[in-house]
Length: 301
Image (cartoon, rainbow, N blue to C red; front, side, top):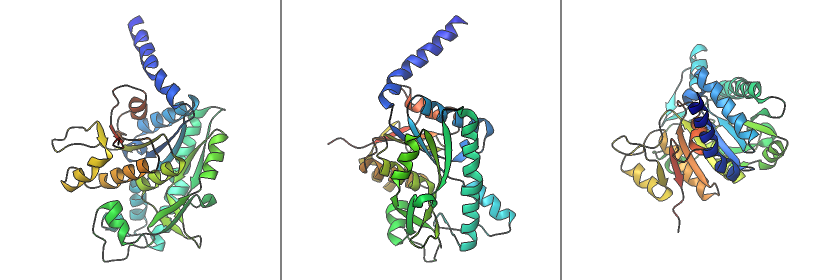
């Protein structure tokens, strides 16, 4: 019994220098995948976020919700169609996307965090349309090539957007008042129209705008893997395109790693891709010497 208590004390002592180092810094966390679906993982995620805030770190959450959107569209008898890996977003689909992301998932995450937060810390839900938080425009052909690494589709994919600016003043006011912002990746255009935004790219843009200490992607894989399926624990930005070209990195990992590189070049210190299926993966990655995912950093000159 005493040995177990000593082990717990050693874990706390290992975390201490990291807590001291990151106090007052901002972490942007992209929340998605199994961590949003499995009830146990949902609870541990909420507690971990509250812990970060209570030790002086400022978490900002950007969430996805593709599975929830697909399920709702199917229930309503609306065809789920993807073009080049991107959801075709008609006005009808955009209405459902916004309803699910901003009205359902966002408020559920906020309620879950607040359930564990006590009286000192509160989560607050935001759509990218609130306070023109995420200004956006319709994506163009260049976006497909540079952000997603695919050829532009011939068909129009509707109200899919890319972020042009982030209202950091709104986020900084909330953070200063001890709130945890929880952001649904809905962009707002010049005429107030809504745009569907890739959540990975939205998280990277928010992290870049805030000059965050860390950008953390919660995924359904251990991290970036090599051709033999082994985890790459540390990755420099200059290797990313090489790994994409030789097929080591593919599919949904491409926008994550390309967004990671953009975020790093925009002032974010480190990017972490971690397995959201692992309980407390955020804490294990940032508060232990070994870590559990892939850490991406800029190559030093």
